[in-house]
Each structure stands twice: as structure tokens, then as C-alpha cells.
View (cartoon, helix red, strand yellow):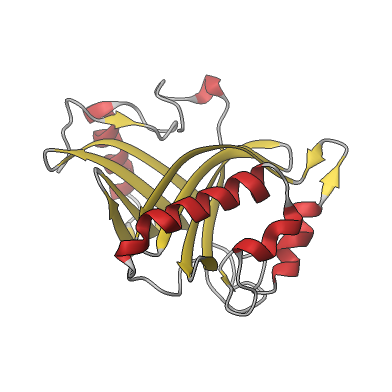
Length: 229
């Protein structure tokens, strides 16, 4: 499944190629690991999945793989400790799992991209209602809830250092049907972070959201030079 000769690793905490994979698997084997793939999708040469991991501690992760000739040749991920349930009683992984509306893939991709660029990056918080259906919205972020006024309050929070949640660059948008994963870079509480946001859309609006936020280690601590994104 993995072409070790070509494999490019974007997790900064893992060494490159077969050496990194061997070290990772050896380390995980000591933790009695349990893995649950909650939902998985395909977008051309990319496969993206929403995972639950228990490697001595419970974590939620998005995994992205690029394939060539049926083998994985590149990998990205974003990991966060499992928290919750949130104010609306939702966990970080429950909810819809199956992609539908495949004929709307590109429309949904464009809609999610516009949301990230206009609301999350450009800070046009007043436009939330253009992109999110407040009557149907289901929020899985462990610190929020279904009421979009909670999201609005977080996005409007500022300090002397700027926005509390500051999306600065959208790197990748992957989609299958009504599910879209956006991979972004920015800062949270002043720390350099990667944001992975998974959206489910219906009738052109976001109706469900899952995410992970991971702090990016300083460059001096990276075990490969490929970059997080």
C-alpha cells in the first residue's frame, strides 16, 4: 500500500520514508493502539479520512494520502486530543458519514473555499449566515455548539496580538459529494497552527462541521524538511 521509495512525509514529528514508518510503527506497537476510521472520502489521487486513535491517549485526526499506481506516496495529517462532548452534546466524530450528491462536488468545494477565504481569512464574520444554515447546523468542535452565535463570538474575539483565531492561508480543498475538507494555516492564541475543517453541505450551505487544530512545532524540532502543508 505504501511506496517507500517515493513516500513523502509531512508530519514534522516523523522521519522521512521507510525509516520514519518503521520507527513510527515500532513506537505505536508499544501502546496497544486502537484505530477507528469514522469516515473516509476520495478526491482524484487523494484519499482523506477522519480517524479516532487511542495510542495511550485518545486523539482525533484527519489523514490525507496521495496515491500513485495504487500506492501511497505522500501523507499529511492533523491531530488533536479528543475533548467533549460540546455544549450541544456532540462528540468530535459523531454525525453523518456517507457522501451523497456527488454531482455537486465542485459546487460544494467552491462554496467551502469561499467560506474559508471570506469569513475565516478575510474576517467577514457578518457573512456567516450566507454560508451556514443556522436552523440545520450541527457543530462538533468541542468548545462550541450548534448556535452559530458561539462561532461568531469566537471569530470576533481579539487581543493586543490580533484575532484569537487567525486563519491566514488556505492550502488545500478536498471534496467528495457533500463533504469538503479545507486545510489552512494560521494562528490560535498566538501559536502557529494548522486548521483542518471538514464540512457537510446541503442546498449550498454548511450544515455540519468537524475540525482539528494542531500547533506546529518549531522548525528546529522537525524530523523531516517537507513542511506541514
